[in-house]
Length: 335
Ligand SMILES: [Zn+2]
Image (cartoon, rainbow, N blue to C red; front, side, top):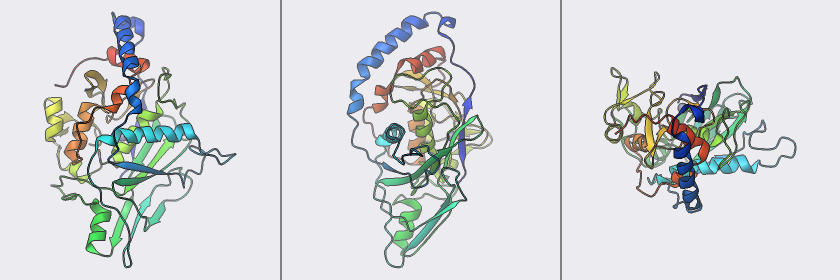
C-alpha cells in the first residue's frame, strides 16, 4: 500500500484578539474541558489492540540512543492514540502459521534506517494489529507517513491465507469491497519536527501535536484512504466519498483530497458537538490537537469497522489551545 503523509499546514490559529467574544467562549470551554478531564482514566475495554513494535526504531525516536532505554513518554502517547480506536469492535482472527503455512510482507524501514524489510511468518494475536514504528529527521513539512506494506503473500491452508488477507472479515477486496481486515503496518515520524509530546494541556502555537499525528497515521493503517472498501465508495467525477454513514453525518457526499486518500483539506465535523477540523484531512494546523470527529468515525464505519456507541473517551482530551482553534474556525459545514 502507498505511503501517506500528513504535512504541516502552515496556517496559524487565529489570534485571540482577532475574534470578538472568543475570550469568554474559550474560558467557558476550558472549564468544560476541566470538568471532562476525569473520565480519561476510564477507557472502555479496547476491542482492537495495537501492538507497537520498536524492533526497527534504530534512530532514537522511541528509544534513547545512549542508554538504550525506552522513551516512555513518547511510547505512552502511541498507546493513547491507539485508544482512539477503542470503539472498533470487530473480531479479527489471529494470524498463527501452522506447519505448511507461510506468509510475508515488505514494509518501509520505519526509521528509514535501511532498505525495505521483509517480515516473514509473523504471528499476530486475535483482535490485534502489529505496527512497526520509528522516526528520523527529514525535510520540514512532512510530519509522518504510514502504510500496510507491499507484496503481501500467504500460502498454506485456505483458512490461514484468509486470516492473513482479511482477518476473518468478508468481501475485503475488489471494486465492490465492503469490509476490511489487516495484519498491521508501519509508521515513520519526522524527528526534525518540534513535536509536542504531551497528553494534556501544554501544546503551544507553532508546534505539531504528536498525539494527533500518531492517531491520524494509525487511521491509514486501519484502512482510511487505503482499503479497497474505501476506494469502492468513491465518486471520482465528483471527487467525493459516498459511504452511507459519512454522507449522513456530512449532509451529502464528502469532498476528498486530490489523491482520494483523505477528506478534503479543511473539512469540518465535530467532537461531542464542538466543531473541529477532521482528523483525517490532509494536514494539521500547528498548535492544534485534532481528535477523531463524528465524520471520521463515520468514514471508518463505511470502510467496514464496527463502530460501537460507547461514550467518547476523546471528550476527555479537550484542552485550551485546541479549543481556541475550534472557536476561531467554527464555520459549520456538516449536518
Ligand atoms: Zn494522512
